[in-house]
Length: 191
Image 1: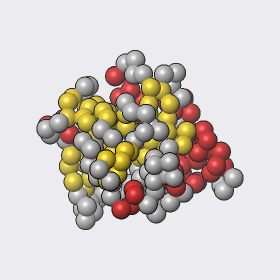
Image 2 (image 1 turned 120 degrees about the horizontal axis):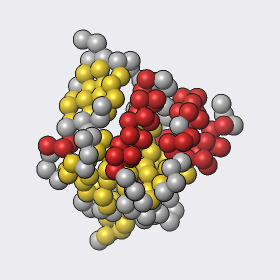
Image 3 (image 1 turned 90 degrees about the horizontal axis):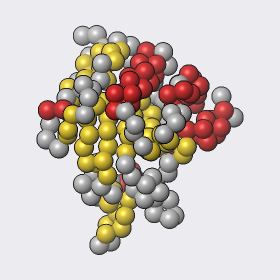
């Protein structure tokens, strides 16, 4: 069986590589217009924000005002296509309506992820590996379709922090988020 991956309407038939400073820089350099829309701010999060590149994808969260959902879907499709088919980089894009400086909270002695809204592409389909899956979020409970390929849901619903995330909490009790331009400057030195 050959490799197949789909994010929204974007299709990729080439397996991606792990994120690296080189393919991340290529992606950011090529997507400057999409990453700098007038109303949104792009933030690097997840493993790459900690310079941990033994991960499957490069996570970017967007914050700010959405002026047009169809435009957001179009931007996400452009970025997924470029990342997967040119940079051979799997990305995970989300718009979130949270304060990124307050994504976790301490409740009854337990760190939990703060509940907030998220918007991302659907479906996500992967075939041709031992991790085949088909997620059409638009037909799952708790997801609402916004456009043909965007869905909205509540993120976390106050779930507890897992061990991986717990080890990443900053001294002030937050996960690391880095503005995309600051992250690019930090990896420019290593490429």
